[in-house]
Image: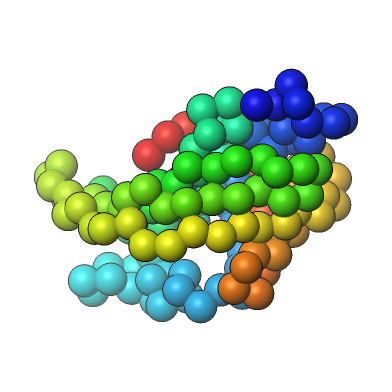
Length: 137
């Protein structure tokens, strides 16, 4: 997939998971707490070659809300996505699967190799900073 894209776009997009700051309808509600637990870090993990994206909100010490998507890089700016599933990871290895809902796109504006600003179909804005080695939740 990346070989068809100009420049270093795909390399920048896939290199590492990202922590997020956002102006988004759903994430502030989740970050406010779930089941009496305060939310921790928020990640967006992209694997361009595999065509996957994960949005993750952690609930330390053991929990997470994970939304899985398939992606397609459309050009140097736009990435299309379709949700494929979601789960709520609970303590002691338990989890609750949730149905996938939705599809859309986000456009990226690169500030530098470490920071991008993403604008999506719902008019949400995410400021994304690379943070740590690659990982999948």
